[in-house]
Amino acid sequence: MPARVIVPDGLEWITRPHEPGEPARHVAELSELAGFARTRANIWRYEPGATGRRHRHPHQEETFVVLAGTLSMYVGEPPARHDVPTGGLIHIDA
Image (cartoon, rainbow, N blue to C red; front, top):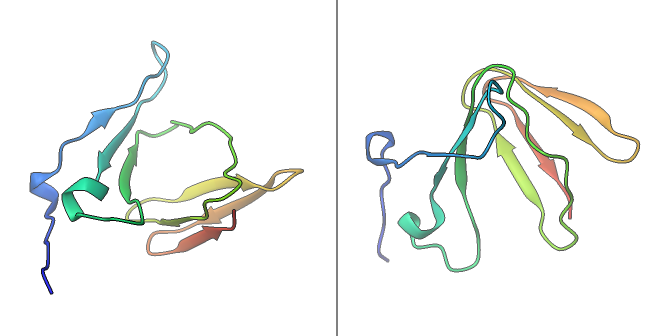
């Protein structure tokens, strides 16, 4: 079975579009590097105060693992806030 190792020093970070003066979000897209066929993975870096857009996936579940800091995520309708600390995980059904 082949294996692929991805190390942080080799990642390419892409800055996502944001408004002038707004804190940026950066993503390292891992799926192609890892050779995934049926799943996706990304690492996100959010500058302090940066926010993502609220959205939903009807067929795709998502799992977030917090590597540093605290993730505050609003899930559901009405939105309920979940604060996930370093080392924590939040899984959201499709």
